[in-house]
Each structure stands twice: as structure tokens, then as C-alpha cells.
Image (cartoon, rainbow, N blue to C red; front, side, top):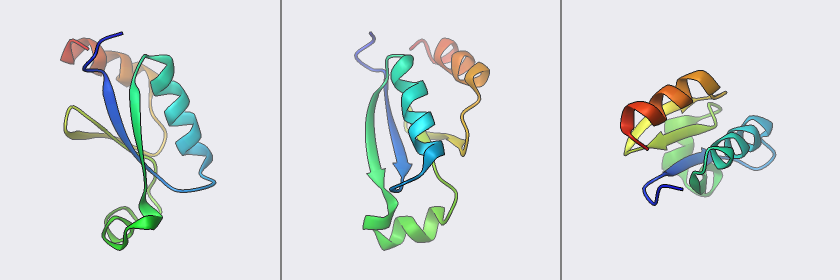
Length: 80
């Protein structure tokens, strides 16, 4: 696994799409930092009901369901 393969996932409790996103990312060897948006009013305002939000390489890459094909292309394109 690449040491630089990490992602931030903005999530909330009970979100099945968030669980799917985390599982998919882990399956591709990502280390995940999960951030519960309900613990931060600013994050609640920014993301509202639109979770998960996935940040890879410092940029927001996905909102909602992750497209596995786009994820593989992103990994290849970033050399992860």
C-alpha cells in the first residue's frame, strides 16, 4: 500500500452511503480519516445532507456515491 494513499471522508452517523464509500476506499488501500459533520456547525452548513464527501490529495473528489471507475482513474492519474 502506498503511504500517501489517504482520504478524508466527511460523514454522519447512520449514513449507508458513507459506509459504502469507506469500504470502497479501504478496499483500494486508503487510510481514512472520518469526520462527522454533525460535530461541527460549519461543516453542517457546508455539506448539509450531501454526504459522504471524499477528499483525496487535498481536493474534494466525490460527493454521495463513489463511482468505482472514476476512483480507479483518479488513483492511476495521481500515481497513488
